[in-house]
Length: 133
Image (cartoon, rainbow, N blue to C red):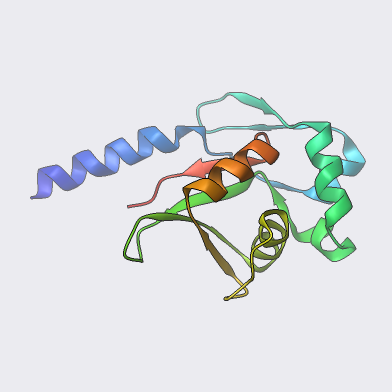
């Protein structure tokens, strides 16, 4: 029904209100020290210096320039069961390294709830969960 679709879209917009307005590179965070980002609802979210240092330690110089923070984790409904994903070549490579996963597709990494829990415990301020229809 059309009404149901509109309600779903509105609910997803409300759930995604904490998405960042813009994202900066890991290198920018490392060099400039302004460790925060702003969200759509106007909130200011701090990013941990320890997480920046951790990512700096596992990324190549090119990845430091290309990795945008916070990393967006979204729902992935394409398989038999609902899972989570990160998209983008750099994001895929870095998160696969963090989780110890093999990369099957260079611009897409799919993972499940235990991996999400581990990732969010390692990088709670450098990751944001988004919900897609």
